[in-house]
Image (tube, rainbow, N blue to C red; front, side, top):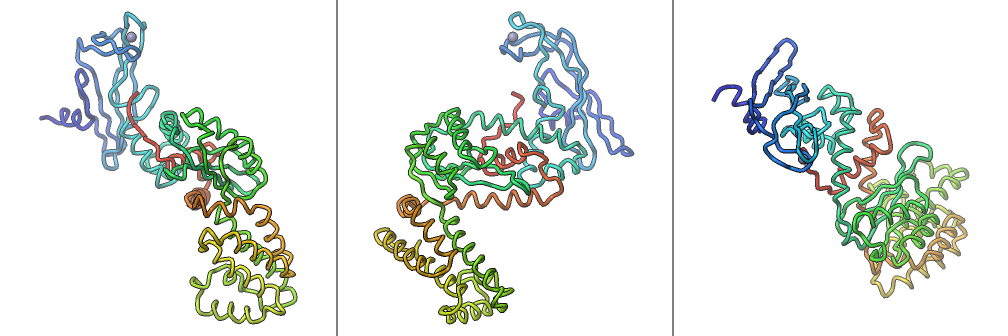
Length: 406
Ligand SMILES: [Zn+2]
């Protein structure tokens, strides 16, 4: 086997294609592989599949291939057009690339694999291509795989908003909580996002009336949107968001009170932790604080929050009673922030208690936050919201990506 046959094998070339030349420049760190088809070779029509079509004319083209070690590698070939009796003159499909792409399939597979783990901008630097070209590759395969998705079994959906950029730029993410994957990402965080999801679901063989459970926060927009677009679904208010209400209440209470009681300063995080996660000094601070609850609002707020920890470990039959007692207690606490929490929980009682039946949370969607954070942390990370959506689908969409020339 000579060198050219070796490269033909490495590239997966089949008849009538073969390697004609290898131009290796150590100086330019460049390898150019010339490919041609044998005289008299025939091709299949790219439209109808009719085989045995002869070349009508050719067009010279080149593709970026995976580097051979540090050498940028280019494939060059003349691509024949055939004259199909049924379809007319068409360029043939080449086995190493998909139509319209300036990259080989192997190169594109490499970009996709890397894009799940590092910023596209960094891949662009690594391979020496402009990132907009690589984004085009990512979008092509993500769109194709999403197009083939089957949502007919979706039954429980998690809905959560994500901050895309500083300011008020949000997306709403929808996940299949059983299959643990992201189904859809909509712009903004209004109720209309849920209507968009409903149509996307229908487009992918899903049935909105089959959605039995929805998990989300207590935003009025989502509640109204779910009522309109997923009317048969029971709503569970997400555990993380319920606990966040309490954390925010205690934080605001502390900030207000430290104006008059300065020794509360510097203890923000101790008050947000659960005792089992506190350091020794934090635990000492928290227990000393609790003993001052007759005079300090922050101490009473902490007591309330720590007691609420037991809510989610209640047996289902006592959960309602627990919640109502806790709310009654909070409403008499003389702490504005806690009174507000008790009113919110009472108003949304049904959805808060639904957890004891559905047992669903948006933990999966919380996990995406770190992904968005890391993408944002890198300079200009994903440039556009559409790019961010593609990366979310790529990483948590469990897509069936198929890198083929069709
Ligand atoms: Zn044809």
